[in-house]
Length: 427
Image (tube, rainbow, N blue to C red; front, side, top):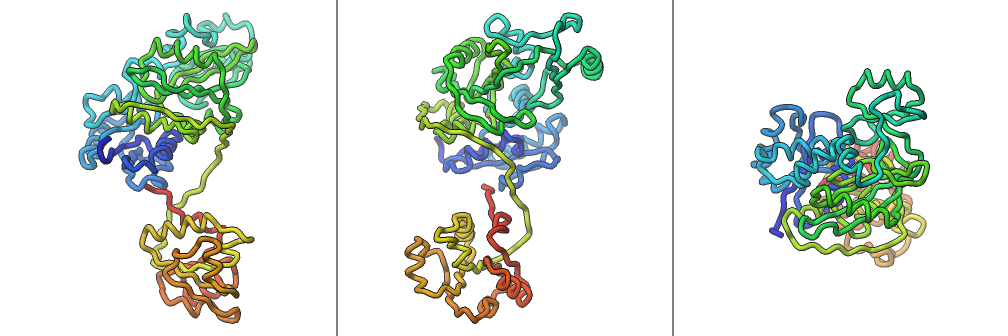
């Protein structure tokens, strides 16, 4: 690889974009950028270099992308939404950076459920489709848009009247059999010359809005067979996945194929398969080798809190007992924040009423060398008397100490439950 690759994740605020971020943010050869449309999203909380551009449906979107590409010497755009993948690949000749994607023909087929089912109807078990409402002998049926992601605008329909209403409302719906069984995603990676290099199935145990929130790896020889049959009909470069669901007879039926990163690919990433980085290598035609730490693992995903604030400080005063060391263990989140301060050149002062030799305690917990200054005061003294910088903050478990410092000096004070506001994950 060259020294650094500039990668633009578009859009950076989707679940896909955030997984790409997590995959690449610690890679020394990668500099990450993000582009998003002007709607509320999470990208600016994790990307230091985030740009707002017109919607992909706007005619000026490609021009805006090109301005970012030229100004920041972007090497690749990493699409992070199904519609954007297709739009970028369709306009690849106008875009001044390469696109991490499979070929256009593959993107056109996989963006349409109907085209996907039609292509594989003689190769793989696919859900039964109903073109005529009178052909439906048993309800419920499942209704979803031909082009969609997650569970957007999907419906379980229990009668003909409701179905007729939905089809009048949206003619792009497809009507299919309702599959009752377990659902699986099979994460794959393909090299354009060597073919399928990795395959890993995972059961979608709990989902929310079509996103897998709890998942664990599952192996089945059927997955390998299906992946090879898909690879024979579609040209796939880099990361991709397909989803299966069992019918009432236990047969795996194909739900969709997507030539992109999936958010819950993280369950395989942490075992050694960095799909995003490997996809860049695949585009660069760098020889690939995948090393996997096979283990019994389960992923569970939940909301994460990130914050934006205008708090400026040059010095952090920090308490030791019950703040940095709690019940005989080091507060690792606080240590993480302290090293964040070190990286930014912010001074760290240990201000403590610790009653024994401070140097011995710091050595015991491997905390020596973190602090610019150590101030050890008496139990009867007030910490506010030792803080002399107006651009400082105090982190202390004691409410009375925090109250005194805030009232006397007017500086912000924090206990450890407030610490997450100060953590910055942007790269």
